[in-house]
Length: 97
Length: 280
Image (cartoon, rainbow over all chains, first blue to last red; front, side):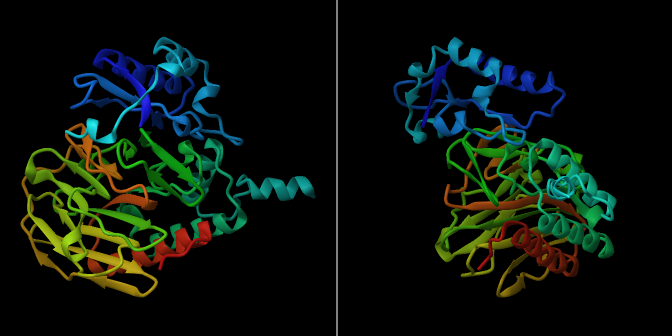
């Protein structure tokens, strides 16, 4: 799984920012990247935010659909997490308790 | 003329439709779905049929994630509220899939919040795949749980190719319907404080367990229902495999077996007509 490793606070902030971006546009919160505690491996105790190419190209809303990368807030989030090059490849079993 | 045709195809032309069908079509079009004339007719026929059968009001949440776009896929057909897709979910034409490790869908409501009663709660799902598949006890088609007595989940049991589940609103695990191909419409429902049933439909017809003795708990579920996984008091786990196509899900209240049989048939027709796909 491709995504960002961060602490619990930041992972929560990221999801809240994505939520706020929808609410501020008068929309329901219909999409979140999610946050997942890492239970084993190199990043144990940290949190994983999925952000693979499929996540980035998720058809969110509209016709033709907008994608996460079409929203400036999401671009800012990625930059604050260190940019796409900061992503890691985490074994799925590492987030299974 | 071209304008009129396009106006009709994009779903805005909804005159003559049942008001509930019209409201849903308008909502998904506004969110980005393209609704064809065939789909519009299928949705209208489904809504009218459920109203005629007195089951429309019993569909407390009904999601139809066939539109290939997250926002319309998240809209409930009956309440017009939106749930939330979380993590790795693929929005295909006709269904959604999870990546099996993070992707799930959260309803905006628990069964109780949605209007499911303590002794009448139920869940349903239309699932398919390219080939027959097994689900294990930890593969949740849907689930919401807190204390054991408020569990509702529909899972699998690989050992004997069974459907299985906890609840609704009880801690008792049951396994049902030996050896059937799981691709179809499954409806797991509490019939009263004393019994529950599971009905299942595919192109071969409908089978059900009959009423099975099972005592309801004393608390209604207050945990938002997850689909493609289980929501255990905010901790989501137990995902279904990425190979499973999820064509519809929802929560019901007060269905008996006869109504379930009619509903599963109508849902199968709705999904197949809208997607051009077929259940085995």
